[in-house]
Image (cartoon, rainbow, N blue to C red; front, side, top):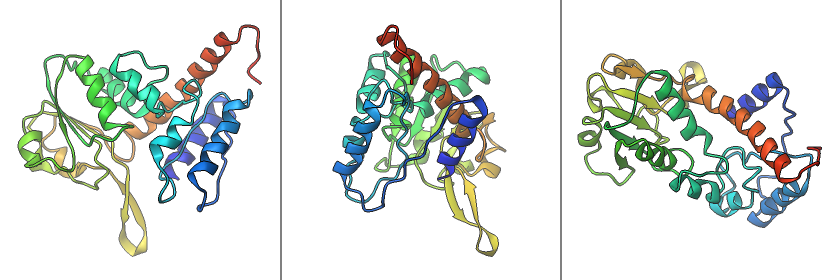
Length: 249
């Protein structure tokens, strides 16, 4: 819900109407797909977001495939993710785009660098690996079955961590001077029964080693939401151009 609240706040800031459709926790895959089909058909809806996780037993990929690729503002439809392979997505995955925008901002050209991406999820890690390959980085893709993770990460000029594991990467995992992009957002117990937000990188440790590091909270998260709003505008424009003379609702 952290991401959803951030989405709503940013949409309100820029004048995009945001509606949250909450389905019962016991909703079936068929019911979720049917709800998405209704939104696909609604001309007043120009962008659709599907917040995860989904109920147990629901095939996330099948549900994501039910989103119209032209309304898929997060770029999570398998069709959109597949088009990343050909460098021609209708709407590219927002989180991966956020990583690439940060690299531009800090002046990190991936060309020729050894990039290690930890976590190969369909929304963040895998599309980021593809984007980096397209930018002519040499990419090592690590995941939960990778043996000797530190032996890979310590060789990275550029380390992107999207594993969904709180503070997985410590100082000893990082090459001195490396660029470290932390995609993780995790809630962990805090003092007095509270919770706190941490990334997949132990920030206080790694900041002493890395040349560049993104914080959590902050960093990739807010930029992903900003790119989400940009993608929403892009989606509306593409739908309008596909229907000459039509309004957007």
